[in-house]
Amino acid sequence: MAGKDYYKILGVKREATEQDIKQAYRRLARKHHPDVNPGDKNAEAKFKEINEAYEVLSDKEKRQKYDTYGDQWQYADQFARRGGQPGQGPFWQGGGQARDFRFEEGDIESMFGDLFTGFGAGRRRTRARENLDADLAVEVSLEEAYQGTKRLINLEGQERCATCNGTGRIRNVPCSVCRGTGVVPNIKRIEVQIPAGVADGSRVRVAGKGRQAEDGSTGDLYLVISVKPSDMYERRGDDLYVEVPVPLTVAILGGEVQVPTPKGSLALKIPPETQNAVTFRLSGKGMPHLGDTKRGDLLAKVKVVLPSKLTPEERKFFEQLATSRS
Image (cartoon, rainbow, N blue to C red; front, side):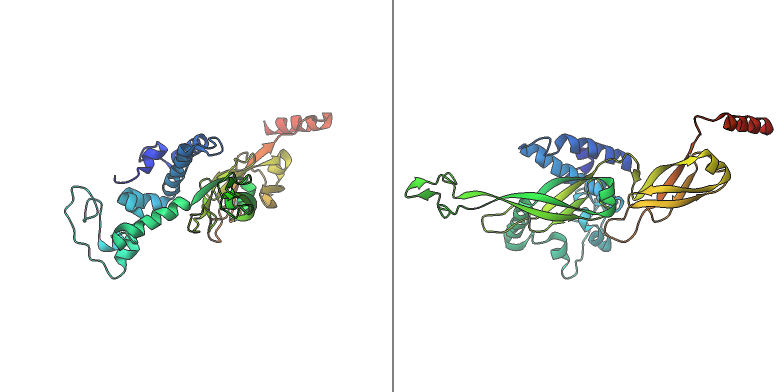
């Protein structure tokens, strides 16, 4: 496969399940996280590569396109309209026969950007801008991912030294403030919004807050989200799973219990003679789907709680029950 092999980057087989991919990503992300490897540019580059691979392979539609079209998966829709297949056409290597693609007006520009403009000058500009982009790891709780949250982050930059007016020297002597560099550190604190529904590997774009070039142009900042495991909930996609303690008397006679959600409790009616481990589905009460108004479901699993420290009267009652049932 041409270009990057995302399966190789994550160390999984092509037939890996979603769970295999998620586990591999978490293991590698922890190993190469910038916070674990401060100042290590190789680890930073590897971390960015891991996130890029996970972003594609964790998305069912993107993964299918990648498996079919390789590192040109972004242009899958255009290739499909032209009847392109792997191993066909002048843009693929393989055993298929060459196929003549007929492009409509604007197709080349939309598919290949400015690759041909100025003998590659446009592509260099695109790569230069990508080099200005920056990643920042942000950890949130499941409850924060459920409702959306905000973070205050520090952006480290530089500004012209006011003491020497950016010249680096005062009366032919190196400036003691900027030490002759002409610039001084400038730390800005900004508030960023993290939308509801984010998951491990989600990337939130903060426009214009990346690195700055000498000509004043700036890249974008990408918040790479990791969601801390919850002690109460298990997340599977947009669905949440939770155990609900149900007293024995309620399980036998029926009644109402409170089901916890990241936003508050909900009342759940328990039918009489409900067995242990029965699961109730609360539609639309799970995680928000990132980018739209859809929601997953909340699945509440009954955990029957047996009474303890029985009084003599209660024990006698259960003995009578046992006798009558036998």
